[in-house]
Every structure is written in structure tokens, then in C-alpha cells.
Amino acid sequence: MSTPIPAAPEYGVGGDHAAARRGRRAFRFCVAFCVALTLVLWFSENYLRYDKSESQYRMSLTHEDPSARPILRNVVKRDADRNASPRAQYLEALAAVEEDDLVLARYDQAYRLNPNDPFLSINYGCRLFLAGHFREARERFREAGIHPPKNALPHYLEAAALAASAAADHNLSEAIALIVRANNSGDPIVFPEPLWHASLPTGNDWYVRQERRVVDLCTAPLLRLRSIVLEEAAISLESGQAQDWDSWLDKLQVMGARLLGDLQTPIEQIPSARAIAAIRIQLDSLEMRNNLARRFHNAPRPDLEQQHALLAQALDTLTRFDASRQQGVESLAERYTRPLFLVLKGLLFLLVVYLLSVLVVRFVDRRRSTWALSHGLAAVLMLVLGAVGLLAVLTLFAMLQRHGAPAGLALSRLTQVWYAILVVLVVAGLIYPVLHLPRAETLAERLEVYDDAGMALRELKRLRRRAAVSLARRYYGLLLGIFLCVLSVWVLGYRISESLYPFQVKLLVPGLRSEEHQVVRSIQEQLSHASVP
Image (cartoon, rainbow, N blue to C red; front, side):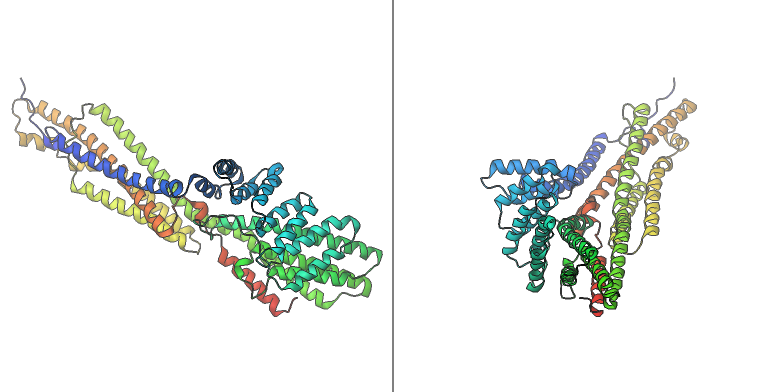
């Protein structure tokens, strides 16, 4: 009869299972605390910082129209049920994303709640104008023009509504008179700002897109005014009646110049969409004036041709910038989305590896008799260094996001380093147990098993294989937990440094505002030096 194998703590047999269980629970508690802290902070900031209606309103501002629409409908309904005087801001936000057949009704509700808001009146008037309700649009523009702050935009828009309603009568004198008064008023041209929340940043591409949307809405009537005036001028040109068209077109050109602004205009008020509309109005006015000169004076005017050439060059510069801006934004977006995909892939990869190890352990060691195995210093150092390396890569990604230069090569290198660290850590989990556990032959000699050395050696080898599999599973469990802690530290550190979470890509990707301002300012300087009116 063979001698039974004595306790082998090196293989987890006869160890302190209670202490091992306490250590595992403590580690799991630490991981759960890190993850829970991150989730609680995110949840409290987005859902508990403001009341429910305000939180949902804030959330809707970062959604596309189809997604924002049902959220804002719930906000408006809840606000109307709870408050005797609902907030016009919520209704206006809903109107901006509402379906076409409900837009005007929503704007009307918002306007009735806050008729003294000039920018709400401007947005409402532009929607009425685009729907063909020119007389109502003119009333909204006229009301916006009498409320502070002083603003020439409502007067230009009122002229557009007047011209559109009088186009059938071919009588634009009153509309031109409104343009002249607005030109001579000296009042600034101030566009409505996009509906936004004070807690959200404004330098990102998403905000720039919302700003462009508002600018496009408000410049649409002005471009229609340009078309109406040019059509009437073309009719007069064909009939050989000069009348006052050169003077009228000059007034329209001055409107375009004022819309573009000058070196005294705050550059943040002149987005590229507004500058493009302004230059197009001037270009078309100059072209028609030159056609009039050819028709009635048999020769073009050199001064008008020079202005036209400068403006055409400026328009080409702006359109090329707008075309390249999207490519630049997409390149920048890659810097913000790349680490998110890497984190997701890494988490799934480690989770699959851990689950596979669990399945293997359940098959090899169903009684969990090797739970008392202790990790060696090599495994601890490997996990610590791996965690530091992963966190360093994520930090470098964050630093790269702030850098404005092209970074395709740096992104690729960091991606390679990220995958290399993960692969090394996973492979180490296969090699480490073999190196850490003593050989069965060495342990057999130390235990001095004499009765049946062959059977004792086979038993020790079986215990070693079982211990190695169990140790690998525990290593992968530690690796997965440490990875979650690294992610939590990265998310919280990112929130502290950037005031946003790394997954809020819409609010993180820059909108290239400084580049846009530089292009528009350079055009203003060129036109100013050339004395373009």
C-alpha cells in the first residue's frame, strides 16, 4: 500500500484558505469601489446635478434631431405639467428640432411665452419666411428690431420679408429703403447663438455645427433678398431701363460688406458660414452692377472688376477652408475615438481570456483545492508594470489630443504599444505559473516519499498541473481587475483635467475655431487694405 502524499503548500494543498478568501474579497472590493466611484460621479453629474427636466434638456443638446426630439417633447410636457409658466427655452429647443409640420406651432408657443426675446423672434421669423409666411415673418423681424440690444440684422431680415411679399408687384423701393436705414444706422449685426447649456464647452465641433445651423437659417432670407433684387435688376436690364439700379445694388453690396464685418468687429461673431454668405451677396451685386455698366455705358467698370476679383479670391479661400475643415475635424476625431476603441477591445480580450481560464479551472479543479496558492514577486511586478504602462499609453493619447499637428504615426505607435503590453501580460499568465511552481521531482525529494516513489511523483505532477491552471486563472482575474482600476483612474483623471469624460467625443473634438477666425480675419485685412466697400 502506497504512502499518502503529505500536504504540499507549494501547490496549494493544506494552505490557509480563509486568508486567501479574505485577500480575494479585499481585491474585488477595491476594484468594485473604483468602478462604482467612477459610475456614481458620472451619474450624479449628468442626472443629479440638475432637476430632471434640465438634465434631459442638457442631454438633448448633444443629440441628433431624431434622438433629441422625443427627449425634448418629454421635457416640454413635464415642464408644462409642473409649472404654471413653462420655459420658452425648452419649447424653442424643441421647435429647432421638431418635424416640419410642427415647427411653426412650437415656435409660436415659445414666442407667446417670451415675446420680448429678439433672438427668439428672429429664429421664429426665419422659419416663417422659409415657410412662405412673409407678412408674419416681417412682424417678427420688426418686433426683434425694437428690442435691445441694438442690432441691424432684424432690419435686413425685415427688408427681405418685405421684398419677398412685394416681389409680385415688382416694387422694391420700400425694401431698399429699409436696407439703407440699416446700413446708415451703424448698429452691429448680431446673430442668435445656438441654444446651449452653460455647463457645456463651446469650442468643440458639435457647437460649431449648431452655430452654422443658426447662421444658415438667418442668412437664408438675406440670400433670398439678394436673388429677388438681382432678378428685378435683370428684368430692368433686359427692358433697357436703368432706373436707380446701380445705386440700389450698391446698397445691397454695402449690406454684404457689413455682414462680413471689419477689423473692429469681434472675430468670434463672424463664422465662416456668415462670411461666405456676405461675400456671395457682394459678388452677385458687383457682377450685376458691371452688367449694367456694360449695357448702358458700353464698358465694364475697372473698379468693380477689381473688387469682384478680390472677393472671388476671398470666397475661394473660405470654401477651400470649409472643405478642408471637415477632413481636419475627422483627423482630430480619430485621436479621441482611438483610445476608446482600444479600451473596449482590451476589456473584451481580457474578459474572454479570464472566462476561458475559469472554464479550464472548473474542469481541472472542481473543488477549488488550490485557492491558497500565493503569487510570487515576479507576477506582482509584472501586473504593476503592466498597469503603469497601460495608464501611460492612455495618458499619452490624452496629451496627443491636445496637440494640433498631424499625429497619424504617433497614434499607430501608441496603438502598437497598447496591444504589445496586453499580449505580454496575457502570455506572462501562461509562462509565470510554470516558472513560479517548484518541479514535482524537487518536491518529491523534499517530502521523502519512500513506499512508492513513482506513484508519489505522478501525484505531485498532477497537483502541479492543477496548481498551474489555478494560478493562471487567478493571475488573469487580477489582470482584469487591475485593468478596470486603470480605466477608472484614467476616466477620473481625464475628467479633472479636461472637465469632460473621454467618451464625450462630440464635446471634445475641436471645431477649429482659431483656424476659422484666422482665415476670416486675413480676408478682412486683405479687403480692408484694398479699400473694398
